[in-house]
Figure 1 (tube, rainbow, N blue to C red):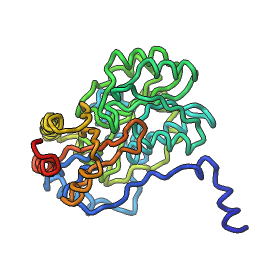
Figure 2: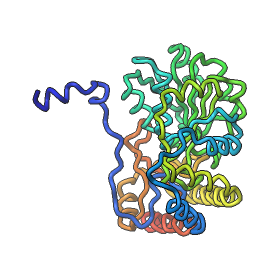
Figure 3: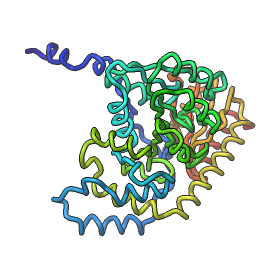
Figure 4: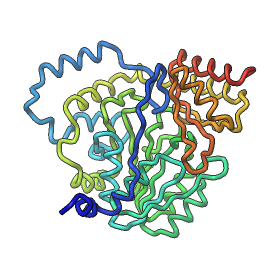
Length: 358
């Protein structure tokens, strides 16, 4: 068998994919991945260091990290027994689609949104069914309801607050969708600590609702690669059958437990990020841009006619933002992550240099 023949043995749904990729770049200010700009205090890291030294590395972590799952349930307001943890929320999404979408089954998602939804759906051989946001880049409830009516039993994936637009569904909108949907709804709430409504109380009312969240954003734990889902415990029991064993390493498990106990510091930093986001939004609204979209997350989407000129100036200053102009409906759009007050001021300085009077 030659290489060409071997490659043909790879599933066509995989060969047809375009890999998710982010080109590495040098930077002084990194605002392109929606990370929390505030690292955790040295004391927490030192405690983790002691834990790593004392903990035997030749032994597996707990088969079921019950302590972490229980603390997550208490933090999120979910039922104990209704939590699954994963190696980032991306793994959780993959496990869910493998559990819920039969081969060729429809998976409905909004666009523009997180591109991993389409990639995972098509990668497992499901049928991607995109539904466009409305002209203001908000959720189109009518279009979503039309799509679920046209595809009975489909898996519906919603990101609220939505990445990269920042808009969020309200409770009445989600209730309307869930009341009409006869399949599972995966609600990705990676950014919910920054805005939008907390959908956890709806889990008891809608057993077809599953909520995913992450430690990468509000918890400033992107390096941990830890995500989780919350759902009806009976549903979770079935999903656990396909989750890989020992998918959470001992370092991430213990670090996540420590971070969950830093509630006061977490709330303080989230409040600061939200205040910085709102201040940055007010500044950007005064700039000569086509559109600045109100955000419930830790980033702001901006449509800029002179996008290339501004990107070049930001790059020259060592500032990374995300060019999302290749996404549907997002021509000439940039996504600005919210950094520290000093980093956000550096962004404003560059913008003023390109657009005097801003």
